[in-house]
Length: 504
Image (cartoon, rainbow, N blue to C red; front, side, top):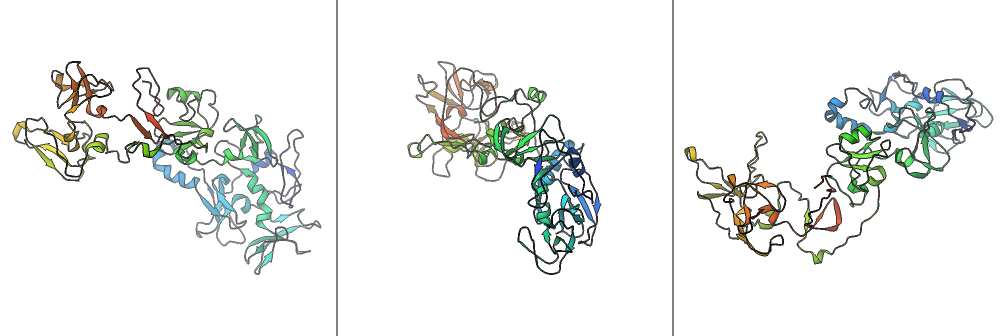
């Protein structure tokens, strides 16, 4: 027997004899089973509602309305902030004084009063409750003008708060006790089209979200014949996270990761079958499972990999590596050559081989114009010129206008490198332009990329190295794999980059 919020009179429910879903109504109701019909009724929507304890009509709000909009994908970036705000939504129910959040999905609010909001279930409570009073009396809605005490939880009720009261024996129950069980045992989850019911008994089972075995409380769909179970830990995972926060900085990514509820094989094929950035395993056998992914780049992780709190032990001592380089640089305009050779003052520059005199512009203003599609590049390292100090060519007359420009720190590059680990047999000489190459274009023997900037050359061996590769350090640390030294490897064998999945 149950007095349902959408039906003023009690009605009977038939339960499944094989797998009953039972709720304890915290001494208010007897244990009852919730059928698919009951869940269907909970989805029924009343757009407007009048309540006797509030003077204005209430409007029904659906926190998922944007996600179900067919045109949402077209304006995804414009609406992203609004959707995130709905997912982070929190307020207190004016009846039961418990939190209203995204997983409740529906709630009623007053458009006139900014401080009056109610759970959909609380707003649609029946006017009368049966089988709560110990002697079997019926309880009705009341609003007291004085303090009162709930006869179930012994909490003090304030004047103007809703309660159920028996006119015969003066038995009083607050709205929180009257709704607590159902409110916490039924959720609307974006991973599934039906409301999910929490199973009150803990058990060991496989979670359909992560594919792992869990012991504890599960949410279950009583509507689907195929059975859908998700563990409570997975059910309330954040929609977005920074992986460095959930993995104790063992793994890092510049963008937040977004929770996705499947990874169809067609999508995997279009993305060239990416692998988990944590465990390096693929997703081909787990296309139906949840994952975290980056919306801006090819970064994917399994659910449990993205939330693993394991700690990584540091394998080096800072004292033994005082000049260790930590990447990436905090400023995109910063570079390795600037890090090594830029000095505020007092360091002598080398003479740069150029047919015209050079003028030092020490301005710290930006040289980058976002309205122009063409960036000004340094003729030495071929990196963008974003700010000074820079050397510019003084020849600006007529048709012989020269666009030569050079970072100040590139003028400090050593003219000769001896005993370079990649070419120790002969010294490498700095050339501002490789002689004998068409437009000075050469292939760097270290990275294999073509370049027409400054180069370190061995004419005897026909060996060329661009100035950026010439100073690559032997050891670094990187945010994508912190606490461990990364050592430069000169192997010619193929490998897969753990950051971009590029096969070299």
